[in-house]
Image (cartoon, rainbow, N blue to C red; front, top):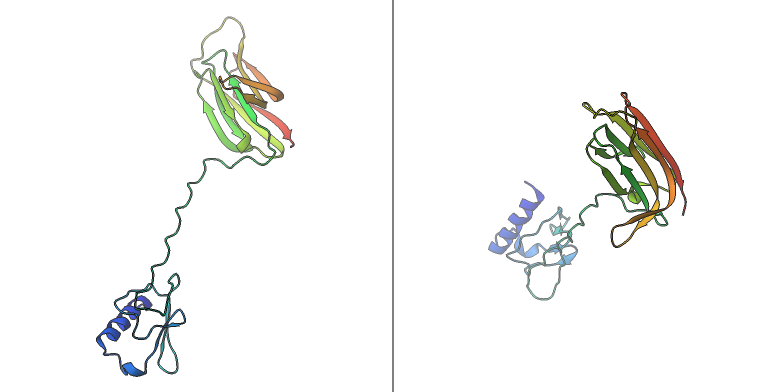
Amino acid sequence: MSTHAQARLFFFLLCLGVAAPAAAVEVFVNGVKVSGALVDATLEVTQVRFDAKGDVHIQAPGYKIEVAGSAPASAPPSAPPSAAPSAAPAAQIGMPTVWLVVNVPSPGHYKLHLTVNGQPLVDIAPDQPQYVAELSSRLQMGENRIEVQVLPAPGAPALAAEQEAINVMVGEGAKAADGTLTLSRLLGSFKHPTGRLSAEAKTLAFTLSP
């Protein structure tokens, strides 16, 4: 029989007056004597102990026991609701605001796979003309790396001459109320032309300090 069931059974017998010998038995809950005072109550208990005198000692964490009056023990307080986890860790104190800007002036030639410090960031489809993201929550003080895999897209448009297909920039900056983004400090960049038939990988490495 579980301790919870034992505690229920004991209180039931105590209320009926058939616990033997009832007059000699004292009941304590969380160290407080409640003999004859605690009736018609169910407690979630973790331990029931009988001492050498036959007295019953019950441990019920989370309950406040008062000796005055005959009110049942108060229920344990409910736990506060847990906060929802954030999608990304908060930026470190002193971390500058860093932006990634990917422009695709000639769409249809390459698919891009980007990672930041080894963690996946985004896959950019061949027909997507631009991608802009604020990266501060994904960066760290010290060395950082943005890796860009350039994957040729099947059925790329035929061009008479080589053109700029991709322009990637990362830098510190700010976005105005009208949505205009200004990079005040360029941390790295690269351009990739059309006409390449094999996959290539580019790395932008830079160091951040407060």
